[in-house]
Length: 366
Image (cartoon, rainbow, N blue to C red; front, side, top):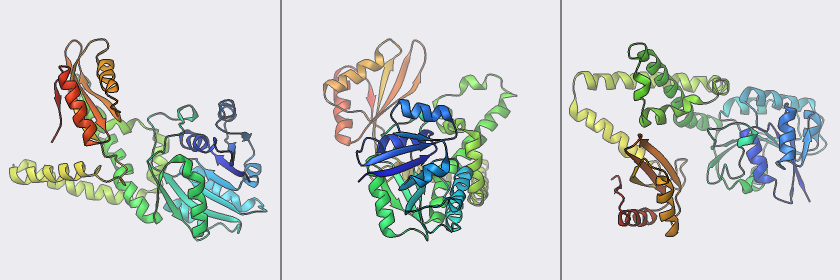
């Protein structure tokens, strides 16, 4: 018997879920979106089987409803469920990165047919919109589920079963602990990245050449500041208490660091940096982490046509799979550096040997 899944909101996340679920013969995917062009694109590219522009109709047809909209809009769509007559049980979830506001709204629902389970697939892309959707976007990513008063353990298992094609790693958390943790490792870093950009912009008034010196480190640490401002304002608003707390702790931390610098407390500064290094390097050592465990190899290459292709072809010939490639720095006419990431130390060592034998200079960071 087919399951009918309505996905309300076909942006990057909603459309990626649809792409993951659509191939199964057990699923019939209905797409709801306020943008007709988005629905047209979803149909033309077979991301969904059916497009519906009326929310009530889309909800009444569903066995499962996944609300994939910004947080404030998701709360509005949740509240509307009390106005929609349902003749069968409806398991509802969302994809919001802040859970407490969503759970509060869900617990206020009076519709006895609704079983709500909060959801947060912890993966994304630097791109946005349905055109950027990928069926494998959530593969091996943490997918947080936050049950509510209206959902049973069997409802949670049913939702997990539905979402199995995403190949995510499911974790069940309370809303408050989810928001605290995502505040620390996701939301707060975005604030810091934006503040660093503002600081650079301020200093550009003194040093006009400053942007020309903004190398890889600055670009990497501030990359997330390029994300959608309206979307992130909504996230910050709904997690504002945690953000304010974290900002207060950050200010205290920076005052301590300022003292270490001003008083030239060399040993304490080394300890501070060492503790940070050890903790950061350990974040990828567990297969349960959001940060994957990669084994990196640094390779020097020249700025010339085909340089990158030659490296990857060499490794392909030895059946070595590369998980990630990053061009760290390259300037016209001189040497640059690649960071190649592998899933295991064995692949890392094999790659080092292959490339050294081909005349490349390599380094493994200890």
